[in-house]
Image (cartoon, rainbow, N blue to C red; front, side, top):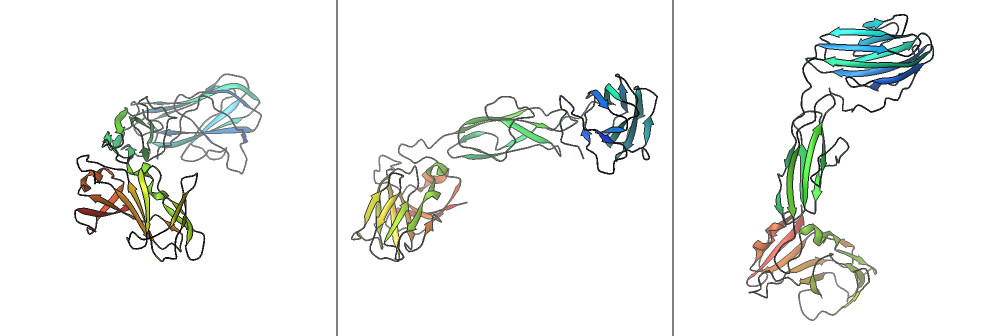
Length: 362
């Protein structure tokens, strides 16, 4: 398995004794990544790991420079020790080397042990052979376009273990760019992505342009998430439900709120607005309360009666949150198909030329 680590500009060393019984820390290295100013006391050790991809023809472990004497131990697939190793270089100075031909693909481990005090030594591992593979170009789904609602975007790469990085302003991604997915776009954006994998060349960039706008029909509410229908709620303040707080959806342009128990016009109640957009309600004892938000929406100005009504029916004696709502609309149901984050279920027609819909969050 390829390790998803990136070469650091500076390698921080943690020293260990070669005879320690505790699992020592291991530093991941990339090919040609230089460890500088290696300093060890007698008997101290440091450990490194490198992944050799398949097809490499040569792997060279080299240490030189500085003062003192340190030995080099190499082992495939596990940490080396003074007793267990595959290869070693134990010259009486700091110039040590292990040169392997056609190394097995996988993890290789290195232990450097100081025989005397070591100061200022350098160490690196170099892989030779075919150039590293390139990560597959990311795929952005959907592949851009114009939307009248927030759109969820997912970016993938066909290369196993690759990490996708992206930006939303069209700039070129880097290994430190955004990673959170899926991406919910509520505004227009240019998504640009690259995929990265340790030991591989970064992918070619992929980009997609998304235009997210509200409905252009005059007076029509914006896309469904901005209408925030989930905000509807009822909080009773008395056991019989005669007093309570009504929480209405934000950003819904309604002209007035209707209260009734059976759609009759003789229902009386008080509706007192609060500064935070909620309402204090006083009603006679009821087991059913119908709240209607009559919208200021006229999709077709040639038919001014085409207003939209959001309707909620519930037992006022119990606390309520939005589970579903009916939308009444006069002979114009097709205008609502752009609300793709919601499911619209046709119901029976409560009046001639009217259509009832149940609005349910997916």
